[in-house]
Length: 230
Image (cartoon, rainbow, N blue to C red; front, side, top):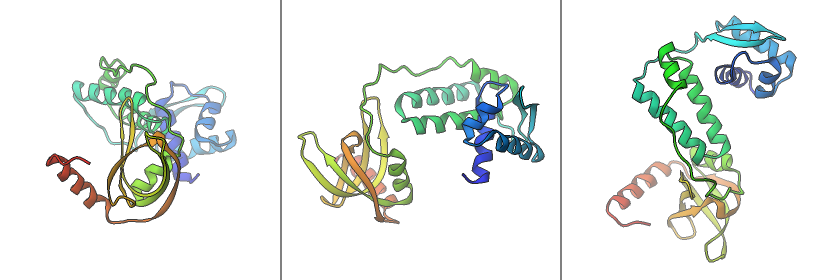
């Protein structure tokens, strides 16, 4: 892991975890040895972060000078907390953790009164249970292919249990309580298609289709607005 990424992950853990946080817990969160963790704490302190505590007692981030002050209304804070609780029901584990870490970084910059409002938020998302089947593919790879505009080669089993091999230009992923869908430009059909992600049996990266993603999404939005559907 790159040094900058490691230090960012350490700061995120200090913001998110209940203080004081033991060195062992921080080392586990950042994937380093205890000796490296102590060096990273020293590096953050040298960079201006105010971290109280020491080995054997635990650490508390008392001030993060790297982040500018922010201010949100009470309703904006409720909206952020609601979005995070909804994500915990809809998103996969990696995406949920990313949202939790991002929210922790935001809350760390709030004045005390607003941080308390976030802690005691009143809006939450309700979830009826695990209604969506877990995907069997690497969602991180799928997301990366969307971001980088790289095609994916998939083995897909449709609702009639027919299996096909396709090359797809992945355009976006949509989450709901019951479905996880991939919107893509299917190279076999030469048209837009929605794929149930849990019906994708295998996935591997292909070649670049840059810069087609944005024009394809715009055309898709226009088609939907006209009521054509896909």
